[in-house]
Amino acid sequence: MPIMEGQYRDKLHLGQEVEVVTKRDQKTGKLTRGRIRWILTSKPFHSRGIKVMLDDRSVGRVQHIIQPATEPPDV
Image 1: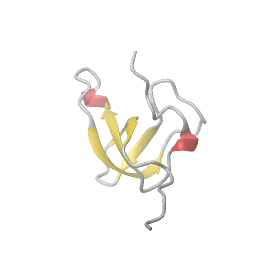
Image 2: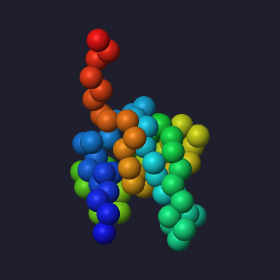
Image 3: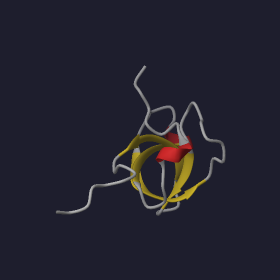
Image 4: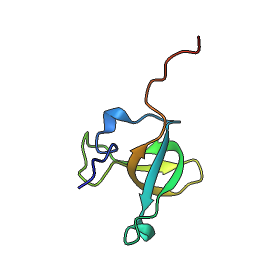
């Protein structure tokens, strides 16, 4: 079973780029990439991924974090 990165709420922040699986794409596993507009899951952990709304208003569970929560400053 692959390791999911989106199971812990404290690793996610608004504006962060992630890949989610939407409800309609659960069977195929198709991922949708976007930036987090809202974090919808209130619990600190969810086994299938924290549910978020992306900027394009699609809702899904985070499977992968594309942009880390904290990026190093430009030097």
